[in-house]
Each structure stands twice: as structure tokens, then as C-alpha cells.
Image 1 (tube, rainbow, N blue to C red):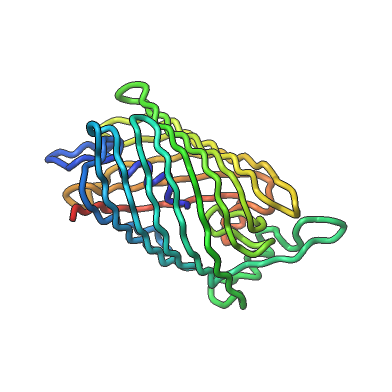
Image 2: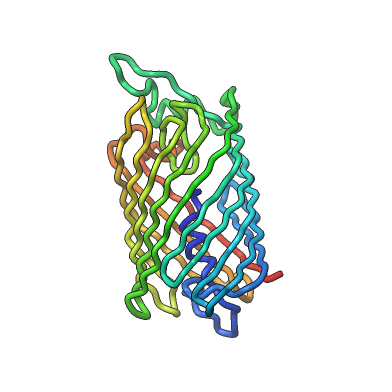
Length: 274
């Protein structure tokens, strides 16, 4: 899901102390139950998770259930992640209801999609109004993640995932801000974080997705940045996360309300020990 990278950063945390570093989210996660509360402008997500360590603190099993409510959709999901040293393997199952559903028709002369440009999507989905259709579907994802700390200031995080969406064909994906068919798709994400305890972390971000379209698979690259810090709105264990990806000159890509080939998300998270 769109919070996969946020989860990769926020979950490896240890109990806070006075003067908690602004890059605390890169530390080892503590055992026990926690609640994660995310706010992202057009919606919020509540997650309950439990972490159990074994053979030392670097090996953990984390289970999580989440409920999301946003401007365009709602979703329930459950996941489990097994981390062994610098590698983790996990899976997620979920069910999504999209009430601002954007579905399209095949274009002329064999084109994949008619009226898929951002302006046409904006006219089909006005800010105040109804798109006139909904979509409800299950999804499942399996993923592997690599954490590679080079030193105290540089950390590589790389994710490889395969995902099945039961969505309608030729429909807009609100999470990945793209238009594709239902079925299996894959993605690879790599982020190289430069971090410091006094200000947090910033990183170049590279994403590749292999999307199903009209019986074929289109490979698409996007570039951008991620940034994370502890804003300190509460005494401990909060973070502010920004992610931005761009694909210039791609009519299928982007948050269509902005008329830009841009995917941007700002998330504020609080982590509460239970």
C-alpha cells in the first residue's frame, strides 16, 4: 500500500527518551503492542500492531491490522512481517471500497484509454460532486525489504513487491496515482537516506512498476524524494513524512486534481505504546 515505506521507517523504533533524536524511526523496534495514528490531509488511518523479537533484538515478527478512511475510499487490511537482521519478508491482505471510482473506456485506433489525460479525469471527478460509480475489491501483496545501513548517516531501504488487485480494468488507482487493469502488478522501490539525529533524513527515491494494460505489461519508472523527521508535536514517537514522485509527459500518471504528473503525500504519524 501507499504507506509501505512509511511503515518501513516508523516501525523500526525503540522507546523514546528525553531529547529523542529526529531520526528515531531508524532504530530497532521495541516488543509489545502499539497503536499507529496517521493523518494525511484527505484522510486518516488507524493501525494496531504487535512486535515480538527472537534470538536477539534484530529478529522480529510484526503483525498489524489497519483501517483507513479517506476522501476517495476506505480500506481494511491485515499484514505480517518477519525481519531477520537486514532482510524482512511479509504479506498483506485487504479489502477496498472506492466511492470516487474513475473508470474509462478503450481509446480509438487501439489506444489503451480514452480521456485518460489529467484534465479529462478532473472533469469526470469534480471536487464537489459524484463520479456516479463505485468499485469494491480484495487485494493481496507479498514483499521483501532490504535495510542496508552503511554507517551512522547513510541507510539504503529497498523494497520488491508483487500485488494482486481485483479492481476494474481501465480504472484509476488512487494509491499509486496511475491507470491500469486489475490483476497482478509488481513494483521495486529504492531509497538512499542521508540522516542525522538533529534534523531527520532525506533521500533520493526511485520506483519501477510493471502494470497490466490491455493484456500486456507496461514498465514505468518514476523518480523523486523522501524526507522524514520528528516534528515534536507530542512528547515522543511522532514523525512527519513526505514522499514525492514524478513521471513527466505521462497522461496516465499523477494526482489528476493538480493537472501534474506528480504523486505527493505528506503524512503525520503518532505511535502510542499500549
